[in-house]
Length: 126
Image 1: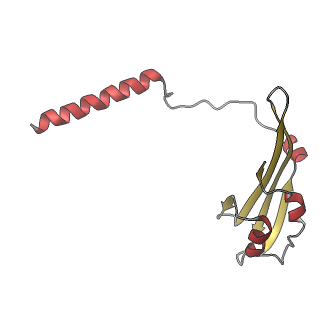
Image 2 (image 1 turned 30 degrees about the vertical axis):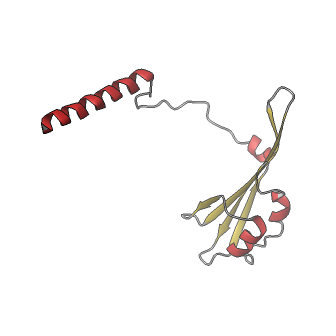
Image 3 (image 1 turned 90 degrees about the vertical axis):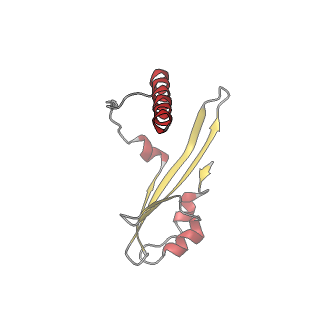
């Protein structure tokens, strides 16, 4: 289990236009994700078990976003459940990295280059 236990039940205790940030901390605990630009806090609950073959089986995946006004009063609460997460469409295209991959050869050559530069600096000081 990760996050806040019984997130759905605890969210019902929060009242829009009435509860404030201190109430949220008292009800849900410390904030794992804070977005200061949008004045938003995010909480989550993940529960799962392992199958007999060792595969993870997630049966609770709740995520909530709580939006505040400039005074710290709750303006909006959005709750996403496991069923909502299943409806999200992801792009099938893969992004290719434009940088050089960290391979063994690259790391070896970089290490050798740094050693040569350090040796040259020591030689120039003498």
